[in-house]
Length: 410
Ligand SMILES: Cc1cc2nc3c(=O)[nH]c(=O)nc-3n(C[C@H](O)[C@H](O)[C@H](O)COP(=O)(O)OP(=O)(O)OC[C@H]3O[C@@H](n4cnc5c(N)ncnc54)[C@H](O)[C@@H]3O)c2cc1C
Image (cartoon, rainbow, N blue to C red; front, top):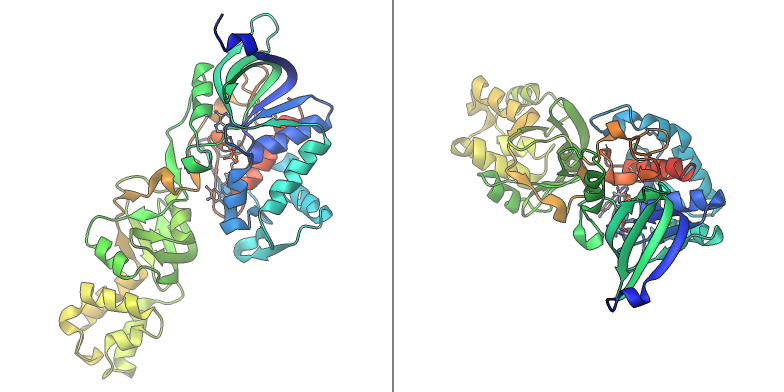
């Protein structure tokens, strides 16, 4: 007998949930409220770390307008049933009943007014009230489906203490690869593969772009400058703020479009989404022919950006009045302002990505219950699935809706 096996703690529960994040806690309290005995095993030293860091510490917990089109998945219909079963209104009603102060920001995004902790406490209090047990610092070492009972057996370590748990239902809520320091892990994909389920290609999502070409120094020189743009890639468009950074480009516009971008793709930026820039500069030549182009553009664009574009595109005429530009030159500059094509060299990757694109292939999962069709009793919820939301509270809504759906049956 090994030293460990003498102190193995064995336990049997109805529902075992791996991962005490957004979806796992939601699933736990839902199942426990049905009278199920629920145990959550969390790898980190405390549950819900990502919730605490989310939305700049204020947790963008949902969005008033949630539709299937706000999610990316190989099966765009997959999210519909769960989102209908547990809607943003359900979550908002709960937040209101707790008296949590919240506010609506741009694009109907709902944030806590005080702190993301309000949301985590709401989940943890409900877990406690319904008898959910949460154990932290738990590392799973083996997982198997038992032939005799059809249930699952898990063996693992909590510190130096070994445990063995048997459960009728096993819920995988271990999240995805983004931000390893906040619990990002690929464990859920390993479990999926162990049971013969496919995992679609994984990629960092909601993530800043980096550049290696001439744009790198340009972005560096503009770090901190922000403006509203329309950004387009692969037929998807978002109108949001763009932020130049020391490494490249970020801001909501870039994070949104990064969910659609593939390596090698170009991205088109409309720096003046409310203006026909060609007409604007041609008319300016007529009306203000003695002015410098940069002076005219500085009334509609940040000064630093105009200077950077000038040194890139009309440096030889930087000190010439607008009247000295010919129509072809102005058309080219106008076109650049409305459709600047840039080619990211890559993204900042999982270190800073808010989400992971791709995941457990939904074709093998029931969209109503999140149960793996070929493996009765095994459920996948939250970000581990091939479901990625836009920026704006959609990823948490998916965690609440999928967690709730599984919690109703697990
Ligand atoms: C910085 C940041 C800010 C964000 N802000 C927002 C926002 O404002 N609004 C929004 O909608 N979305 C936001 N997101 C995305 C959102 O946090 C995730 O989509 C959501 O948390 C996914 O829920 P989940 O339960 O699937 O995974 P998580 O919440 O990540 O939970 C997974 C849990 O499983 C644990 N775990 C991992 N491996 C194991 C294992 N082997 N055994 C046991 N436990 C394990 C992890 O430690 C973690 O606690 C943000 C993400 C980041 C990184």
